Structure formats: C-alpha cells, structure tokens
Amino acid sequence: MTKTSRLFYGVVLVSAITLSVTACGQKGQLVGGATPQATIVPTPTKMVQSPAPTPTATPEPLKQKKVKAFYSDQDEMKLIEKEVTVSYKQDADVYEATLNALKKSDDPKAIPLFDDLTFTSTSFDKAKGELKIDLKFGPKTQLGAPGEELFLQALKKTVFQFPEVKSLYVLKNGKQVDSLMGHLELPYPIKRPN
Image (cartoon, rainbow, N blue to C red; front, side, top):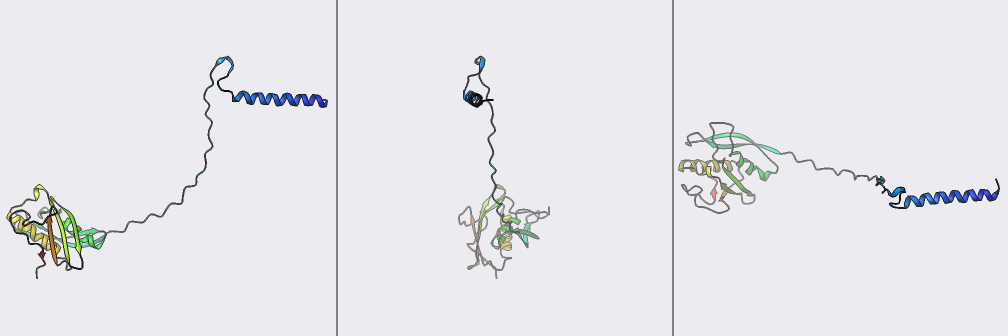
C-alpha cells in the first residue's frame, strides 16, 4: 500500500467517524421520519461520605423516692395514708410528682380526691421555704364540706411531709381565692403546723 492510499483511507476513516458522531448529535432526524425514543443515560453518582454520628446524650435516669400520699375512704369520712414511689428528673420536681400521686390509687378502698384536678404549676423557693401551686379543677372536683376538709388535709399533709416546705401558697386558675370549693376558708399562705 502506498503512502497516498494510506492517507486516503485515513481521511475516509476519519470522515466516517466524524459523520457518525455528527449524526448522533442531530435531534429528531431519523430515517423514515420516525421520532427518536428518549434514552435514559445514567448520571454518575457521587459518593458522599456521611458525617460521623454525633454522640447522643443519654437521658438522665429518673430519681425515685418513697413518699406518703393521702386519699379518702369510701364514705369521705377520713384520710387513708399510703406509701407510694414517685419518679422525677430534678430535685425540684419531687413536689409536683408527689402531688400528682394523689390523683390515682391502686387500692379500691382509697379514693383519690384529686383525680379530676390538674396541677398547672408548682414552684418551690428554697431560700424562703415557700411552695406555690396552681390548681385547675374539673367538674368532679367539687366536693361537699366534708370532702373539701379532707381535700385540704390531704394537701397539707402531702406537702408538709417535706421538712424544707415552711408555707404553701395555693392558687386556683392562677388567682388567690378565699375558698377552693366554697365551704371552707383557704388561708393564704397555709403555714406549716408547729
């Protein structure tokens, strides 16, 4: 093969390759007027390294304490004392946990006086020894005079079992009231009995 014929074949080969590449780039020009079908070309995925997992703080275990809870007998004549275990996160939460224990009883003979009541806030001023609670009554919390007497006794005995509590401020729906249920006068504050 001569030099010229090699050159000729090389030019023809390059022309054929160029023509086929150019034909591939043309849109909608197929033989017989057919339209090209869409071709899905996979795009290369980039490997993204996920950041190292941040160490999650393990939840602090709940503290537990045995406390006294007070309930009514079935006739609303006397208080029944039960020892219960309450769980709480911080020391300041023990008062609210103890008060909430008054809302339920496992003993059918110990009737909760606080079951239809919500403690909307509880705060303790350690320096003054003052516990402030705010109550929201449900319709079943309205008791007669004997029931209100037991209710107040249960409340006092519950909070004053903690020696650091010197006085109790009771609010109803965020307000200071003269009586919780209209039968007995509510002192403000209730002082620890001597």
